[in-house]
Length: 165
Picture 1 (cartoon, one colour):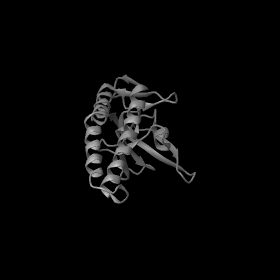
Picture 2: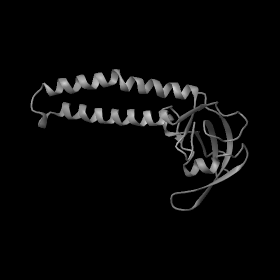
Picture 3: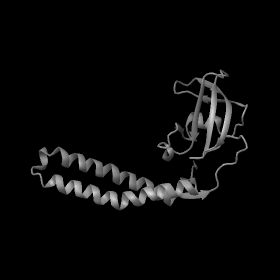
């Protein structure tokens, strides 16, 4: 999955289906559940001092924000193929890097949109400094990226393979 400057997000069919299912749940059954929680809390009396009511309303707000995010994402999504397993770093790839050429100091992450952040693997956006630095590099190549303090860091690409979920 990748995002371009035109606000288009490329998704695999699997990712699109997963996000669509989440949206359908949040827009249907989850809305009913939160409405029932709010109604039950409202019946408890004084709303100014009703912690359950305020917690349910906050949960509702977060849920509605996620519905808006997913709606926008899916409206602008383009469904495509998973990246090729050719060793080149691209969005949708699980990448293993070694810092400053030290083969023992490694990091494995998914280069993808933050929508995959709950996938059980650390996720870096293609627009992040590290994501920008490694994008397009191939296994065995070195890449440089800028740290928040303005200094440059160097990494070596050890492995790049398509994310399998």
